[in-house]
View 1 (tube, rainbow, N blue to C red):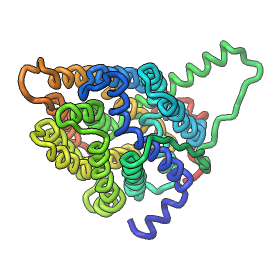
View 2: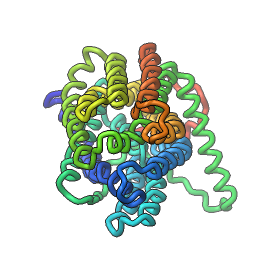
View 3: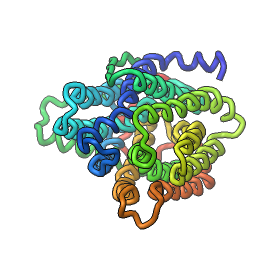
View 4: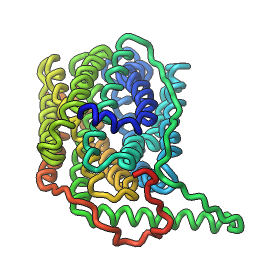
Length: 428
């Protein structure tokens, strides 16, 4: 993606700048939170089952509500505009981190988990879905994979900078407002004579019809159906690993925030190159399917090396595979975008994200107790990373589905969803 490709990012600058600031601030807390929560909940210990279980409960609760909230946010972004939904989702992360800057007591950590759970329900996954839908409105189909890789590459770059700051500075959080040019004509009709009851019923009916339409959109498209299964099993394994990985490394090898930041920075630097430089160059040659399969294969190696880690240097080797498996996300976004009409971008991205949320809901139910068991003295055999090895099987299934994927253009609408109420993007 050369100079001409860079010019295609110009309409996205107002989107990418505040998102980078948001991602940097969020990443600054990741490596620090393990030490903060462990210190508050299990003072003086390196292993904290309570923190692992709370994270599992949080992940489960978030997964339950995200199944409903993510598709609805995608629908609302199609109908009322990308900008207000992005401002809402980004702003929800301010208060939870503010609590921990005031006090790091056990009570404040509990309050953080409660508010952060609400924040995750609204923002986790939805920021990417709405951003990708906005990008699809202003970028040609042929350039979307490259642009999506730039978005995820900037996400990785933000993570690297966030980890550098986390390595050398105290925790902080920054927020910046969005100044986007709207690409969707929002609904403005308001019935002054309608009662509260009738308006409520109307809203519920609209959401139900829109949800039915989104479900039909995905199930009637072989491409969207297949990529949904790929996303489900990949997220089932990867979210399970992400939820317990840092606690596993802390218990198995005594890692602290410094080692966490080093690993995350190493992956982040490589991910920037692979997403911003490599993917735009190889996508025209190989296509999204080959890149997706290659990335999934890398994720399997990543999980197995972590699960079998026998020395402190092995996690660093395992993390290096993140440079490749990070391409799963932009490849998935590109496949979904190609298989959906312009007016259905938010619905398609949101529905698949909702399916991923189901996986995020299910994974901690198994991963949290299994990880805690094998990190304890009561483990049936000595393999502290056994739960991570189990999660790698989900990525194997995802790879099998990806090998059967056929990327096809979207069909014309065949399902009635009160089409007159859905506006096409303003910018094409």
